[in-house]
Length: 375
Ligand SMILES: Cc1cc2nc3c(=O)[nH]c(=O)nc-3n(C[C@H](O)[C@H](O)[C@H](O)COP(=O)(O)OP(=O)(O)OC[C@H]3O[C@@H](n4cnc5c(N)ncnc54)[C@H](O)[C@@H]3O)c2cc1C
Image (cartoon, rainbow, N blue to C red; front, side, top):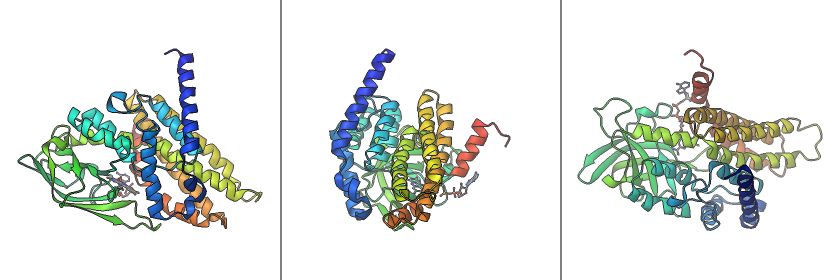
């Protein structure tokens, strides 16, 4: 495609997306979000995934042959940016679309793709990511959940923790130790596990904000069929690293940008008419646009995995700490109309520097791979 044709196509996509968002974002979400109950919020978020599919905006950057829209990462990012401006909700399909779908495309069999991709894109199946355990977070290779081979499949035994959406999930992308004798990094395998079976218990964890976004998950001889192993036995570490690259990448970053833009707009509203009291807001605004710039950089490096992973580490540290600052400032602004919102955001954003790989670990990556500092 020529540059002019590409620009024309990008403009047409943006226009279509903008018009669709204008008529599709639920009015209640825009007008009364702060007053909605957790159950109402969940319902709107579930329905949003289905609307995205009906509108032709699910799996924007996934290949058309797998049910996606066959466009690029640029369009995916552009859509999320427009969604930010339209104050759209975030669906529960995030793990399915951002993490599981690319892993299925990279390592899945044709049968796995045919079975799992359509319900992910339609918004019918929520997925969770069963990687972290009480003794294995930053040091993920230490997972001790075991998958023991039995006729026709495996029996899974162990515990996961901080598993987002586990109480709503139909399936879990699970990293488990399949060979206790094999050396570290070669003893793990990735599985696609049914959450709806007797050996699986998801126990939601109540957070300091009062919400429950994640669970402890217990597997007591849960069965996973041979055909639900993702990739060869012993290659779980490689598959997991691919998943984690997507987790910190541009699509995840822009999803966070969506929420932060909404918060910053709210902070600007809280500060309106209170001259002199909100001087950092302009600084936040500039830094938020730098987050967007870092997202573009991650997209620009998409063909170079090492550079895009390094850019993603910078992106993750940048957005997570800025969001914490915005929320803290919002709480301190003592706006009578939005105090409950800021209290909630202040508590919720404590987690941003921990999930998707803690910021200390990302700083190790930046020091090592970008700055080349000595160990
Ligand atoms: C809101 C939320 C949602 C999550 N969702 C999921 C999910 O859906 N699925 C999932 O699998 N996991 C999920 N996680 C888990 C997340 O990936 C881990 O919390 C994270 O990787 C850190 O692991 P940990 O909690 O075990 O802390 P630890 O690894 O025990 O680390 C404790 C502290 O020590 C620091 N530290 C550890 N090692 C080093 C080092 N080498 N150098 C410097 N500092 C170090 C860490 O940065 C951290 O500050 C979620 C976490 C949160 C908070």
